[in-house]
Length: 142
Image (cartoon, rainbow, N blue to C red; front, top):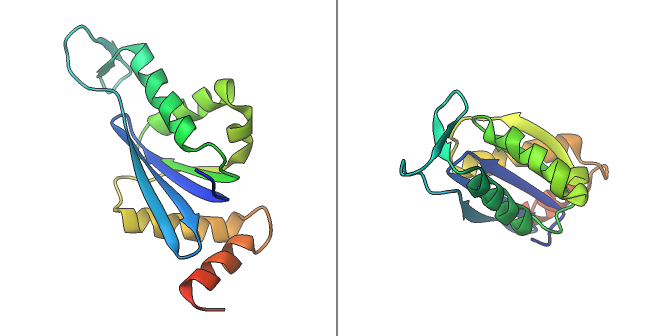
């Protein structure tokens, strides 16, 4: 994903990434580990069942999807976003440096995620008004 701004919404079942470019946001889904009860270990208070390696593979795939992002917002309803951040901390220092925020949100629509991320990036953009200027140009307003 070669973009300056991206947001990822994730839980333990999937991750939806949103790459912001002039003209809009492109969405991609990365599937999480399969959830069946055959030979799985129970982990956490929520009773999520998976092999520890399944989650690592999921996070690895997500890191690959986010490669090249300059500013990343991580959002989601539960503990997966924090587990992903810990994974990034130990496996990809460049992506960790790109993380500008981590926020709790429930299960919004794609449009709600895009609106939330646009507002967030406009507020905290590391390069001043770069995000606001980019989105204004793509919206046709200056």
